[in-house]
Amino acid sequence: MTSTLAPTADWTQADLPDLTGKTVIVTGGNSGIGLEAARAFAAHGAHVVLAVRDEQKGRDATATIAGSTEVRQLNLADLVSIHTFAAAWTGDIHLLVNNAGVMVPPLTRTADGFELQFGTNHLGHFALTNLLLPHITGRIVTVASTVHKSGRIDFDDLNFTTRRYGGGSAGYAQSKLANLLFTLELQRCLTAAGSSVLATAAHPGMAATNLNSSSTNVALNVFAKVVVALFAQKAIDGAAPTLFAATAPMPAAGYAGPSKRGGFAGPPTLVDRSADASDPVAAARLWAASEELTGTSFPL
Image 1 (spheres, rainbow, N blue to C red):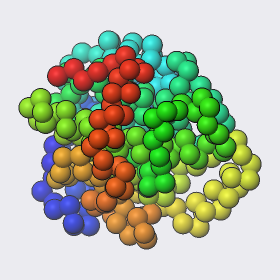
Image 2: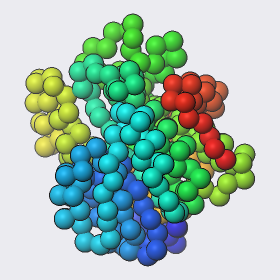
Image 3: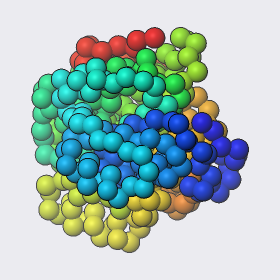
Image 4: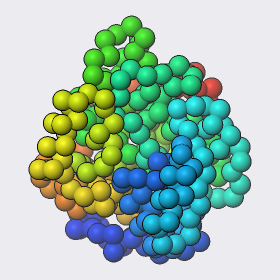
């Protein structure tokens, strides 16, 4: 699943390879960059599975996609739902896109008691990936964020049991840093197991999606709308790094993002991650903690 373009070229969706016969799962594929990625995969021949919390919204989304699609229910904030989804799966998965996420909600707990952002954005995808891994033959792409650079993994209080939550921005940054550490350790495990599966990550820059309005903080939402109106690229452009990380030549645990306007917009390319997101010791420690919290582990 690679294109012939070098990663430094001005890559566009036209450079996507033929995906006929491939099966792609996109979590949260009913809106935003997930929906745009799903449309692009389907347009290039893939069978796209929208793994979504709300099946009706998923069906509404598939009505806007030209190509082969289906909808399956998945709530990443509930380990029972994740196990149910994985247990029902048969056949190969050529590409898993860990796209779904929540951003700066009020302090909320998942069905299993995890802080919602860490539980959904990281732990949910951690469990899903490990449970589906025996079926995956191609790539695993996890959608992160430039916000990871301000993140800190608090191993003493991963789920904000005692520390101050504030407006939730620290929780979001922690979850996005966790996404990159997860990709790093996942790739190490895959390589050690002799697997040809590739783990990559991507960030959309600043894209106009409904994720930007998920906070209940009115002032923050107003500010976000102004910033998005002035600086954000369209959701279809925000999906380009995900598509790039899924199909273009990428190094192991490579990270893709926009190439212009300070990483906020432009054609996708390989981008840098923070030193904290490159720490193999922290990645291994987070992996161990995630195994303990979710009860899932690397299966290969």
